[in-house]
Length: 287
Image (cartoon, rainbow, N blue to C red):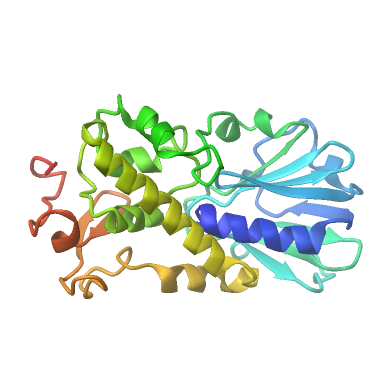
């Protein structure tokens, strides 16, 4: 799933390629992708792109007409830039293509989604806050005012594991499964530790890991073409998706805990005092 660093890179890429251009055609190929009907999708056609912004994991393409084309790529969605959009209309129901945008220059982009779980979402709104997922977002962890005190205030009443708290978009915007693993590894913290139990020193350590991990990922992604961002993300991950490999910090074997629809990876030596974490479906959680 694209998370804050990849969406930030896509925002930069689209700012460079879209600003000042007009969207002459916006074609939905998968009907399920469109989540709003008023304004209609055609309202963005003819509009000049004035700004591209990021809200958590949401991409917001704003036009001079005050209409916004907002996208959430979900777990399996992606954006593919095309210097020249094919003139032949795509065939609905064939392949992963969900939506195609053509600019006045003849360039444009496709939104695609792999797999059978169709969660990619496109909204046409007059105000980004009209998108429910944006309206409920918590603070951006890279904002200037997101300091350790603010993180402590967010976590003080959270009676759940820190891994789940970091992934909650209404608590902190933009962090998903992959970067929460990376942040907790950098913070030397168990993913099953109760969020409300963090000491002031642990909160400071988590805040530093959160900011540093995301900032470094954004910097690695900056300037990378949209088509290479997935590979760039994977290359920069230390523990996520690397079960069975050696931890780059201590050399221990990276372990995994599997869930019904996801998994987490961690280093026992760095994060849990050398103890393997039990499968949360079968036994008590380690804290």
